[in-house]
Length: 102
Image (cartoon, rainbow, N blue to C red):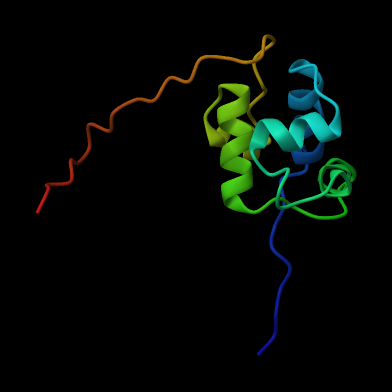
């Protein structure tokens, strides 16, 4: 079975750096802010920012929460981060269909 590389947002590395710098954090500080300082090393943040590796979805969610933005703002190349970070997350309730509780 052939394996294909996962498509990656072109602007992801730029946005991750922008988030860290806007929060005034070092790479070690970003690890602490994300709650990953006991699991990962500073070199992990460096690798994300240089495009050597990609954060998993949970780590991207932690970046989004730290930045105060929705996850799609980070991963969608068509969307820009707000000029001021942390921002204010604004979730919109879907009006198309509501899921009933069981």
